[in-house]
Amino acid sequence: MTINSVRGAQCADDFIRALPADDSVSSPEPMLPARDEGLAILLELTHQAGVWEVTRGGAISGRYLAHQPAFEAVETVAHKIISEGVRVDIMLCTPR
Image 1 (tube, rainbow, N blue to C red):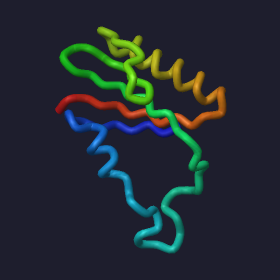
Image 2: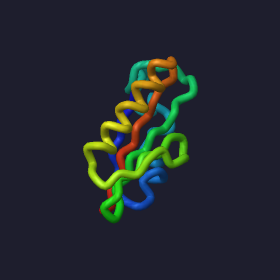
Image 3: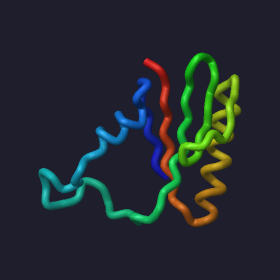
């Protein structure tokens, strides 16, 4: 499971630009250990205008008025996906 935190309206674009294109650019050794390149499900948790929104693969999974239920929802969904043998990436997006 990967968890990333990005601020700003363009959080998905910022996240993608922040990823290295090649993890061995400056060294013959990989910066990160090899991982399964299989399909990963992206869970996003965004906070805007007092509402926490959880999305799974771009589809809205739930909206919450407090952060605790939103975080618990992300955790529950992530554990369910992982139990099915699928990798999960979690992105936290908050406004600037």
